[in-house]
Length: 635
Image 1 (cartoon, rainbow, N blue to C red):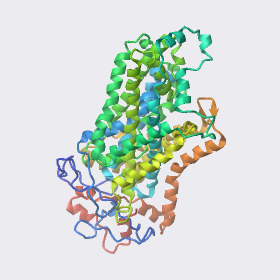
Image 2 (spheres, helix red, strand yellow):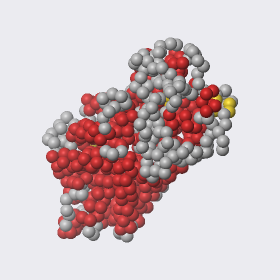
Image 3 (cartoon, rainbow, N blue to C red):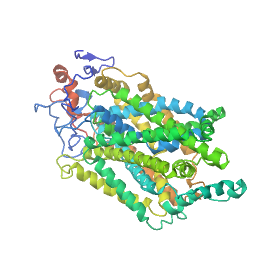
Image 4 (cartoon, rainbow, N blue to C red):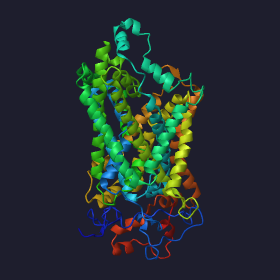
């Protein structure tokens, strides 16, 4: 299809449409003209962001621009791309499919009515999960920038990217702290005689007894103190594991996507091998069928409870890794004409399918354990991390070849945590590297050095989680900083900025230029109306029904602990409004002029490739125009 210039119904100039693959790209997947980061110059005469900048230069050195469409950034080094497109798929699977799929989804499913929970879950997948998942990947691929600089598409709202980076940093802390405990999590050995003795004790007598696995978990692994105000001593065993975790993470991603793309083939696929093996063994155990029935048995009355829908929404945003900026960073290494629309649906199917499949693995074994102990399944199905760190170790001690199954399961959890961690840190490093001024001392730092600095800083922050009171700190980060209301807030603003500031139709056209056809219109309807309303509804429900944070329903956090948690949440959530206010105050002119100037996109050089020469000339600002500053960098 030959590119043609046309007028839209709104009077805007439509950029020429290209078929997917029209750009000349190397066999290795490299882009002929990668994105050029915006220079660290002023935002033009009106904004006082620095020394000011003249009109952006085209490739031949003449002043260039795209009219009211946006400004063009200056030259920079070529951006690397994935060696194979499957590297991107595996990286997204490794990052988004993590520990929450293995323990959190099965627990929520049986807690909220079994199979009936799939109704709100699948509904929110299609109106919330997939649209935002696709938006983040497509934005990164279109802008060819990481989680922060990609929001040059609407520079006034770069705080959206900054908030995502904060979320990613918090998620990296949790992902590294969790694997650090896994080498000790398989529990103490239980011989056959002690097992028989335990099973022969009456239920009345066992009610007041604590499981040896729970004792091992809390007293040996966590060495749990009395509260967050009692940090206690550092566990040096955990410190060594934490150090090993960060060393592995560093060497997995220090060379960028070329090394990350190779490692994820093992870390993303190995958990599926273990899950299949464990399921094949689990379904043959006595009581396994009862466990699976308990997992799937629908309780239709649950559909009328608001908490069921809230759990479905928060689980999707959590397990899809939305709002962390890492998906945008991973997408930025795609070829410009990669079919990210198709990728989004494939990855969503893999993510949700893994969650559902993991439920069969977990509950087949829980059913066996309940049958062996002669108790109801609800008594052995611990909530949240308990499914992975308490209930399953109790189960494998009752299985033949217990050490083998325990080692396989916990190595799988270790791999799930590690690939989520190093792919997430890859996104964090990408965002930082894209923000560093190219001609400064910081901009000259090698990627390996920046990655090492980030890993060292994260390691020392994680030290607060390997003390005797570390579990309380871990839960604070998990509850306030890396999930729940903060991710809902992030997803809401991402949809609003793309749909209402940049323009949903405009972004759909940009996606069409990349993939060669228009996505289903339901995507823009979700970005514009449905997904923001879902996010607001769930967010308000969280706030209205807020309850003080507790640990295991026994320990209630003190007031200062809750205030610290809210400080963690607000430290990222306030990035967006504070950035908007700061940029508007620093600009000069009327409010309308400031808005127009600060919402003008900053394009990369690769965007000019789908502009025909005649259309590029038509889009140049008139000589001596008073609006020349609209075509300058606004970073």
